Image (cartoon, rainbow over all chains, first blue to last red; front, side, top):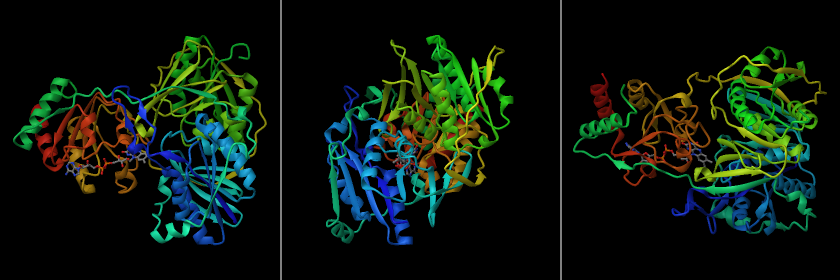
Length: 262
Length: 321
Ligand SMILES: Cc1cc2nc3c(=O)[nH]c(=O)nc-3n(C[C@H](O)[C@H](O)[C@H](O)COP(=O)(O)OP(=O)(O)OC[C@H]3O[C@@H](n4cnc5c(N)ncnc54)[C@H](O)[C@@H]3O)c2cc1C
């Protein structure tokens, strides 16, 4: 195994996302960004494989409409050797097929690799389609929902967590694996690692560098609206002098609501 | 079907396929299209009639030894051949760990859109499928439709009701296709203990979060659940970090719709709340008066669950017994 490519999405940090209460619109402009959690697990796994086997180059690939250098510095600090950022404002309006297509073209341009690691889904859009679309475009063996990986020469073996079973699957490399968050606990880079990483390279490509025909990036879906759900909850606080009093008042309220009792 | 471009539904999980058939029937009737179910496997022909009873006009049967267990390449190849021959307008696929990659790859091979994990489906004025799904970690609900055909959407388990079976007429078609060889090899399959109780069916859920200190304390919730004829639920950290449970409620877990959801020691982070949005009534017990769970609760109790839960048990016993 010589080279692992990790697909990293710069995602909106959904825990910090604000909603305009009047319109229920999300305030995405200026929202905090980070490496999508699941992709961080993928990167961590690549680093662990490298620590075990040695002499592997870890490259990250990011497709983004906005600059992602700050976030990619973190990936380099964690242990990636080089980061590729494919950045073009026109990527603002692409869907999962467009993203997978750009990833595929980028990876072809990079050249040889043994393993592609992806997160099973992304923190913000939560679609979970890109890794499968990428496997299809590159014609690779694909293993999804993976919670454990072992490299065995020119093959990989992986444990998949399915709904009602655990499946162990083997594939010859090159292959693509999508990991779940269970697989590991990503490391937090030390100050030393952060400083060392400042010398590492972030390579920036645009749509033109990849000769991407625009029609390949056309949206196949149309987003009609994205709105925060209406919360029409009563928000009544039940108080009392003692736990007993509170409990009795709560039970009374639940009886009146008709959700308990006969 | 080449004249009347219909709807094709597939899931490798039989119950989920029946659920999707119910919704598929509704849409097919509205658009006056044909509804076809796909049955893939080995020795599965016996199930075809049940699919017709649950709403399929046609069943495409692909019965082959090489299809005994799910593997992505051969199954994809079957669906792709079907889609190429019959040109369905819509393909609905069960959103499971195997079904979702299948849908994504089918959509890629057909150069079309895919909308995953839809909680609601409807049809717009132009007859396009409109899908609703939770996005941004539960902060928003997106309404999305398609610009290309076929329209491919995936449906999570227990999103739609299984329809009542009826005697109806339908056609079973043996679909002949060359089976692609898989690119991966299944070395071992270890079945997991899955509980037969479905939390989606519970009328009452008493749920715990990290506010619960010890595993033994789950009994506090179990006692309440028993009195209320309900089930115990939990947040993800209690499963993932503490391993007290194997499943959880929320965006990445089960989406529940009980009459009553009692959240005990749960902060109310958006990913958890995304799973309880359809509860009729939400009660929150949390010692932190600023916990976000109170924003989405109908009744809130600021207090220590270790004091409130035993008192609640007594009050309920008094009232109900
Ligand atoms: C992509 C993604 C998907 C996720 N999906 C899910 C999901 O599907 N479901 C899910 O649950 N989580 C999910 N999470 C995790 C989620 O973000 C939260 O971490 C989790 O829901 C918090 O669980 P909690 O409320 O139990 O814990 P905490 O947030 O730690 O809250 C514990 C609460 O207990 C209260 N408390 C403590 N002691 C007491 C006491 N004695 N009496 C009363 N109250 C007390 C505290 O005040 C606090 O509010 C997901 C996260 C990510 C990133």
